[in-house]
Image (cartoon, rainbow, N blue to C red; front, side):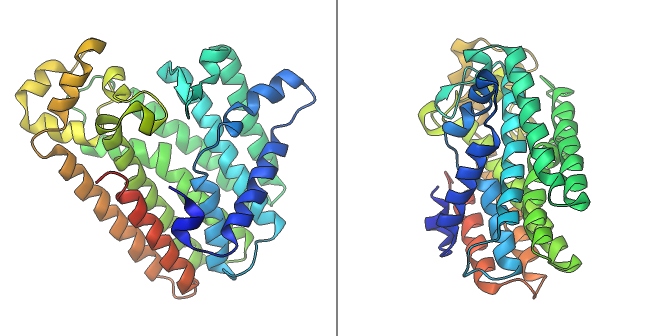
Amino acid sequence: MNLPRTLELAPLGGDLDRVERALEESVRHRDRFLGEVASHLVGAGGKRLRPALTLCAAYASRDGSHPVPADVVTGAVAVELVHLGSLYHDDVIDEAETRRGVPSVNARWSNIVAILAGDFLLARASELAASLGADVAALLASTIGELCRGQVLELQHLFDVERSEESYFAAIEGKTASLMATACRIGGMVSGADDDALDSLGEFGRHLGLCFQIVDDVLDLTATEEALGKPSGQDLLEGVYTLPVIVGLRSSPTLRDHLGRPIPPNRLDEIRRLATSDGAIEAAYDTARSHAKAADEALASSPGLDPEVCTALRRLVDGLVGRSS
């Protein structure tokens, strides 16, 4: 998804370029090896969805027709560094070999290097957040804790055929939705938005994050490795039973017979087909659409937000839901 094209906000392309330059600067280090490792995924690109949310929240809070001040760019970079640091750690947990079409840090160097580099990115994010004030620093620190909580909760239910939807949503609230909500809140906080606007922006980001993760989990079952930029079907191999699988387990005794334990990689395609039958995919998309609607309603609840920017954010929501549905 091309975010400037989707959102159609005049200053967004230029502001994202500013974020990219600041992001590259933030991971430079006098230790050349640490700088190389820390910049590995920065150079691999990415959608930059989270910093775009910070920028858009700032536009919605002040003026969507002009570039944002430097402190908003700093907030956007801090948010993206948290995301990147979490990816370094996730790839160690998942024993991933690729990320964004390039070798993962753990595969190219080692797990220890990936963990330490991820910690460095989180530290840099915290340093940048502190430069924006105690409230922003506290929010980002709390969000890092939420990312950990969500990931730990997910790990507690590996290969669990009895995993509930409640457990699934509690995990993705932490590991995905919390950072998107924070990305939106930081844009509003740095731009002087009032409490009602901040709450609306945060709720928008939360529901957007839930919608985004559900669609991502569907794509892990249905998309190709080329489309994802990483191996597909990994959740099933790792025993992470996401919403479509949870729905499928309720109606398919055959699927249940295959799960609950590690599956041979050579049977992955067969089990993916089972997991995507009996309406499980459409049921998951229906849930994603319900969160998309809630995201729209959150924007509508604050009349102080710029209407043009809110319309652009609704296009973003529609684009995320429509990635493969």
